[in-house]
Image (tube, rainbow, N blue to C red):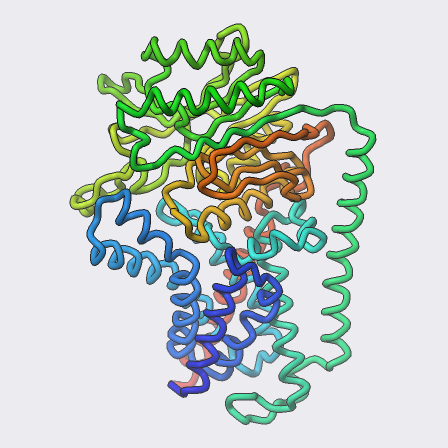
Amino acid sequence: MKKSEMICSVISGIFLVLIFPKFNMGFLAWIALVPLFLALKGKNPVQSFWFAWISGFIYFAGVLYWVVNTMINYGNLSVLLSYLILFMLVVYLSFYVALFGFFLGFLSEEDGYKKWILAPFLWVALEFLRGYVLTGFPWAALGYSQFMSLRIIQFADITGIYGVSFFIVLINSLIFLLTENIMGQYILTGTTISKEYTPSKKVIILLLFLSFSLSMLYGSLKINSYEKQAKEDKNRLKVSVVQGNIDQGRKWDSEYVRETVDIYKGLTMKLSKNRPDLIVWPETAAPFYFQSDKGYSEKVLSLAEASNAPILFGSPARQYVDGKIGFYNRAYLINPEKEVTGMYDKIHLVPFGEYVPLKKFFFFVEKMVEGIGEFHRGEEYSIMDVKGKKFGVQICFEIIFPQYARRLVKNGAQFLVNITNDAWFGESAAPYQHISIVVFRAIENRVPIVRSANTGVSGLINQTGRITKNTEIFLRTAIEGEIIPRDQGITFYTRYGDIVAYFCIIVVFSVFSTTFLLKYRKERNSYR
């Protein structure tokens, strides 16, 4: 393993860390994989696997370092065990990047530029699978690095987040090919390039120009169209978001419940002066069983009456399931008439946070939500209504799964509400990474999103993915603003989903099954 190739792999890994919050150096995404491609040039599958794994390990270790803080402070795990679990998680996630290198290594250098043009198909196929294997974990998909580049990412309403990842890897491939062409030799190997295996500089530059121009043009048209509509549209809702900033260490302390309710009461009554159409509290803002605790439940219901506004809030719930008590992470919507008008039970639970998967294997791990038994998953994609406008709720990290938001919008939601508790993450990059993901759910489905976190980042996001209002983390505050609920047809992405990812899987399967078959026949004929 050459030192120069190792350095290239490390550089790619570092770039892949810097493109995400808090660093927010998204511009590096367009060249982040070029050093890795240089390291992979001319390597066999095994060599390519390890070079890519190095990049992947740095990538995920640098982005997900905050997992340790969560496990130590709220999972009651030792420092050593917490770092061991982080190591295991990073090794697993790095495996997808390693597979990217492994499969590229199977393609012959005689395939020339075709090998590198296949790279975005392969990357997206593996990134998509990462979001579904085991419990699924699509956090830090490459496309999320561009959440601030609004004019470039508007085509996500057609392709979804995986189309943006595809675009980024494609640009990396073209820049790599351009670099090779200009240098006239393989930079690391010194081998002369055969011109028949690489496109001309003019062709590559033209493709780069067209790619960025078309995405920018589409993005500009979409944003301008929305801004024009927003000026004329009177179909608005006035929404208020409460950020209680309740100390996670005291949240489930029974002696602190009254103080928690009083904090939300004070912030809510302050907001009620401006007559909001909807007030949103965070996930489990009410740390008691709203359905059965008559004392505190009456306080919350009376608050909706006093504020003269519907209140959406999170609270644990319990009911009998197969003869046993089942616990749920639930969102309630109550109106000024002190009625419960909507409920939603969280469908995609957080492993180790709300339940322990493979409990026989992880017998030494306790879930992190204290005071409550293991949660059960909800079954229904509930749609709620406020002032005739329909909306769907996503609790905590459900928002990172594109299919759930899409399902709610297909069911009629005109806007989405994301309630969460990001206090788990401390003052790390995680809260900022979390809201960067929310941006894409707004663009994909062209719906505004109202986000309330126990502690930041809370905010309002419009249909173009612009964060119009936001809070700081670890600050007790409230924000208010207007949203324009979707009143037109659903987007191509909402209707058809991740067909770009499925197409990439088909292409990758077709190419590599053909490649393996041809190699097998060639080897068999060589023995004759």
